[in-house]
Image (tube, rainbow, N blue to C red; front, side, top):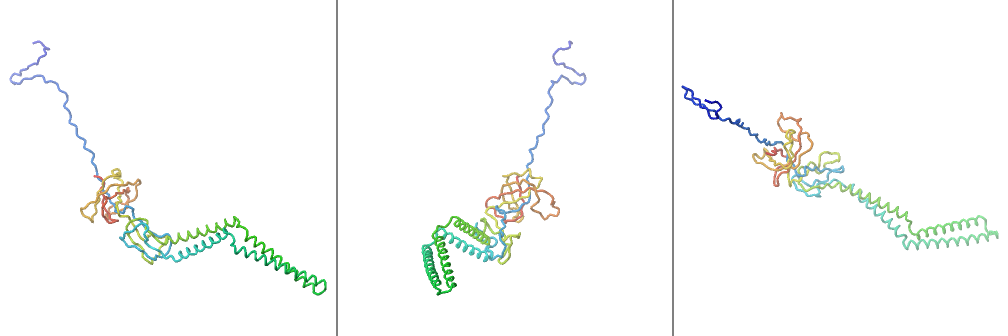
Length: 341
């Protein structure tokens, strides 16, 4: 047989009964690729505490004193500007009245200077001049008479000297009354008006200060909200150096939860994430909200559990969760927040 013939060679294995023929070459079998699992989306569970949307607002005093009255109770709703408490303020009220009197006095003096002398004052000053001149003429006549008598030897020189002194006094009085009349008739000088205006402004400033101090004895609410705590009672002393507020307010129209996110979980927290809140006091009931703000700086824990094995050196990132409208939870309640999922 000739080699190289391009046909399939048939080989007969004697006694084996097996036929062999060449197999067509095929490419390598494909290797099954293992599928990569999608990354697991982990939830963040962290402790938190319920607070009003305004946070807790402690209301203290701007002046030292004694409480005359505390006009609200815990749980009471208050409005912005509502009086919460008053201090004993009789001395401050007296300062206001004194300052008001000073303003009235300075104002009247300024008005007098601007208006000038009254017609009655002008006529009075002119009458004084006429009177002084008449007295002078009488003193002149008496002096001349005594000179004549002295020349005749009828009187002593001392009597003439007394008459001359009376004439000199009369002449001085004419000069004084004339100057007074000129002053009354003349318009007020500008510098006098400016000085009087400055005195009025100074008195008004003292009045404003006295009124401001009096106003500080009346303590009003800066927000619409609810009285969360009442720490002081009528008759107690309060001080600007004190650390305990008279009352604590909060706007509970909306609630939020302040959450301590562990430093190992901060990368999985973002604004807008859905949050589920649970509290042991409410059993299996859950409340929902969304992350509204994520802190920028790690800090100490705000909340501690009762677990003695809890680490206290762990850093946390404060995260705020705005609860859905209508959520009703006690302010200050400790909760567990589940972020994401």
